[in-house]
Image (tube, rainbow, N blue to C red; front, side):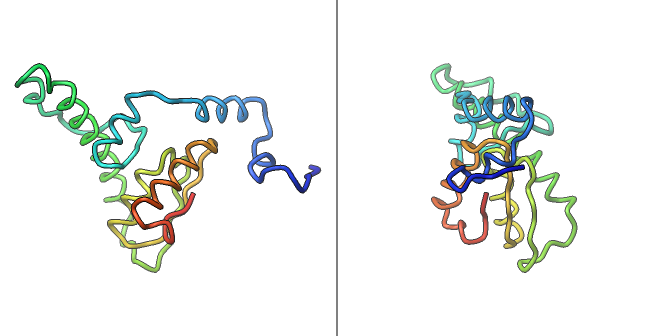
Length: 147
């Protein structure tokens, strides 16, 4: 493979038309649901969620119903990340994790918060990487959490 000095580093990683199409999709994805869920506490996931939902979120004033549902969906997707972290074993602050397919970085930030370790996240999407790096910077963990 020939490289050019002024090409971005990620330009040499995506080789097939499929990889480029997937990256383009995620670079342009702006689903308000994914962003609204992450706005709850600044942890942005793209998970489906895990566990029983709390049916009480469907009760109460109609004007706050959407907010209650968003918070509950985010709780469930964070619960999925917690289950994964529970199964990683004895991670120490001096350890380093790789979050392959990190998306917007929520699980990486959760791993750092739980274990104090360094986390490197990778995504096929440069837009997600940029977003995740900004979230780590906003939380003050960018010295230990990088994408």
